[in-house]
Amino acid sequence: MDYTLTVGLGTRSYPIHIGSGILSRLGVCLQECLQVKRYAIISDERVAGLYGAQVLRSLHAAGLAGEIFTFPAGEASKNLTTIAALASSLAQKGFDRGDAVLALGGGVSGDLAGFLAAMYMRGISFVQVPTTLLAQVDSSVGGKTGVDIPEGKNLIGAFYQPRLVLIDIEVLKTLPRNELLGGMGEVIKYGASLDADFFHYLAAQREQILALDASAMGYVVHHCCALKAKVVEQDEREGGLRRVLNFGHTIGHALEAASDYRLLHGFAVAIGMSAVTDLAVLCGYARAELKQEMTTLLSAYGLPTAVPPELDRKQITGFMQTDKKSVGGRLFFVLPTELGKVLVTDQVDQAALAQVLVSQ
Ligand code: NAD
Ligand code: GLY
Image (cartoon, rainbow, N blue to C red; front, side, top):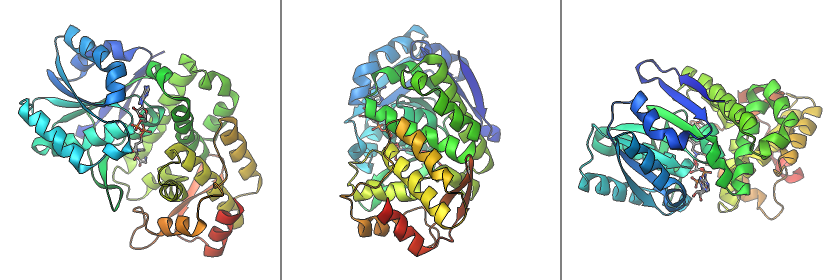
């Protein structure tokens, strides 16, 4: 079953189409939604090798032109050097404001291509075609784009919304298992923080979801995008409400940094969700049973729930204090109060925080 939904942002509203086999219909979808005739496809070498030819065929069959620009796969490519190289390549090939940038890949491709589109000629049209579960349920929606600098992850960027998001769940079949499970960390985040019924659905449909059953996975991706769209529509630039999407991320980001990014993002978020649930219980915001519910589902999806013993607790706390999401030196935590509900607070007892990191 195919789904369509809209991210409602006035004149910058855009549709998200979700379905099985969309990649082979990409050209027709683009033609139906946009006036653009020529696309600069930005993709890492691995994804370009898997899907580049199919995407080009589909564009050509619809009478559209496309050219693929690649970079080495991985977070290490998400920097200003890659942006400069891609911008030069686009300029040399004569891409202009009438053309569009198309991100084909995971969150790294999406963040890079989106930032490139925001900067190139002061902004050209941008399309997201996410191919990891993380990108399909999170990074392709909401317009956060950017790159890393040595001083920190995602420190340079722009809010720049795509004009269209096309999601083919079929491509998840080639995704390495760990990447799929990491994406499930973000999926569980939506249920745990925003929608208790969805949390229970994830528990009940585990087998179908992990087997990539098209109906179950289509529903999951659609539901996550719908939940995220609702938040982004109300708070596009993270003035307040959008912070709820960072459930598990304050501690999660610190864990990623302390592990020198060996810990996959979704795995770090899973540990972060488990740790902030402990924190909420200790601070009296949630009942003790919530921790059990949270860890049972995370474990069922093969996700970790405890801080790896080899990580230095002091270093984790240090990374938390320099988190870019702190505002005026205040560090905000998203704490669960019950399944599907969270509160955002900077009032966290430091002793409780230290206890949570040690006891994890
Ligand atoms: P990624 O883009 O590096 O993809 C992970 C790996 O999977 C890569 O090796 C890639 O080549 C491979 N891959 C992608 N699709 C595949 C497929 N269908 N089959 C086989 N292999 C495939 O990483 P990611 O986890 O998708 O994204 C992480 C990035 O997303 C981080 O840089 C993070 O900061 C960013 N992010 C951004 C937002 C946002 O709102 N903009 C939100 C969350 C995360
Ligand atoms: N991934 C969190 C956000 O988009 O706000």
